[in-house]
Length: 388
Image 1 (cartoon, rainbow, N blue to C red):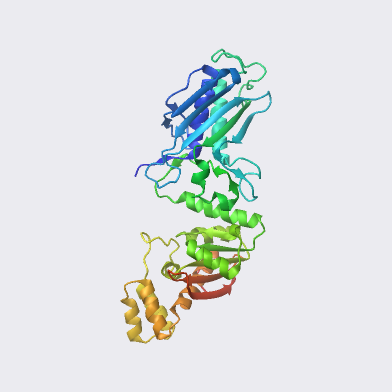
Image 2 (cartoon, helix red, strand yellow):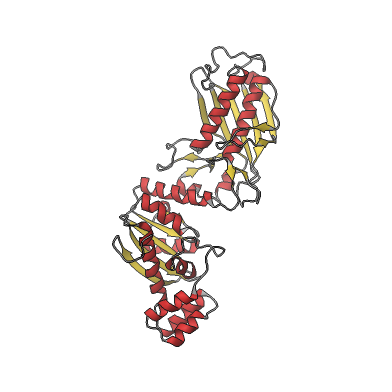
């Protein structure tokens, strides 16, 4: 499948083009950048604007996420570069559609624009190279291409003195479909990327959001978080445990991502809440609960039913059920607590992944209507479950 480019790569290309135009009077189009792993993609400019008299230039790149279902695919990422006073260095600013950090726990200080460290470093390196190549920072009113930079240019090998404002058209609206509001990033999107490349369906952005969610919860002093498979399970977790929004982790199918990160960054208690069928996969030892990568094992459910008192006829019916919920309904009608058994096994598998980390785990299984069909009470280190 076709890969794409991160918002960080687009911002780097746009800022490089804008600063080049400010110094030379010409926008490179396409503009070529070097990514952290050495790739050298080229980006066509969608918009450009030069105001040499004000010491300002702007360029924009449309993000191409390749074949990845990225909500920012097609977004216009703009970079406006302005001259600053000598000694300022490169200063980043959030323009329209780029968020601002309002909570601790992220890799940026509160009050900073949501432009992550790797994109910042990429932009600094490219802008410093442009300054070296074309003579430093242009002074307001200087003719582009004159090489005039005395007093406000970069020292040889040093950063130029410029403000870089990154904006994303309609970014505030797009951000409503991301984790940003829950993470305390308000006003728009984050400028992201560690490699500059979007790998289709790598799910890396979702997993990274899970990790940032844990970081924010810990920084806010939360000792109890919930990993939920969707919005219905989130509502159940809130109703049962009265958790605030920043203690909720949109786990989706990535149970393993939650458990492995909490293992390294513990909280006192982790609640896992999700649909019965998905959590039956966790109970069977699967850490990726997506239907394309793991299946409900009805033979496993039949064995659990036997352990819960099912006779052989019921166990065979469970093994032959069309769906996981069908198996649950058969057991419920017969008084066999299959939901509780799945929840308990999922809890024990989770404890096995945590490998003794000081975290108590409880599990809640729900049906499609959001009714609780199985629960396992909290258990901490030393509980049953296979080692991993």
